[in-house]
Length: 215
Image (cartoon, rainbow, N blue to C red; front, side, top):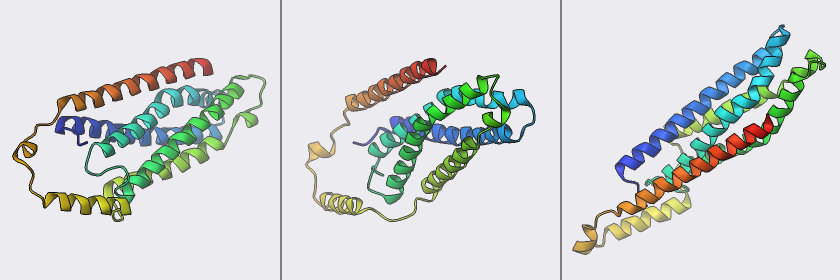
């Protein structure tokens, strides 16, 4: 099902904004991780690891989910398709993989925050190179996804090739007058918007509850 122009622009804007925001947030976490490893100020070091957990819940996680779901919706609602092009499928795999790893790593963020909050813990134990390594990995993956989105390399997948050939065959057959002039059903787009809104509400509710339990 193809999106109406207004809905397509909205979904595209959401996807671009969340993807760029996610990439920018990773740069910030990279800087925080570097500060945590190099700063000589104990309060600064502890503060870095304390702030990572809530910042990840309220910045990284929402942006990651928004980028993932808006990307899926955009692919399904446009001629690009979800698995018609290799670059789209690969970009989806990168985004989904990065989101899953992020959710798994949230437990590590919480453990580091608990350790940083312990005044008895030595500063050497509070310092942790793991956030720096994961931030570098995330940065590489997201930059790779960005390159795919801009350059759109590779050819059609076998499925996409079959779809293209089928579309050409159908296009060569004249359509009945009523079918050719049939208007789009607006209710389909309303359902898409409602579905995305419900999904967003579920994600926000999960994040708020998880963040509250984690702190």
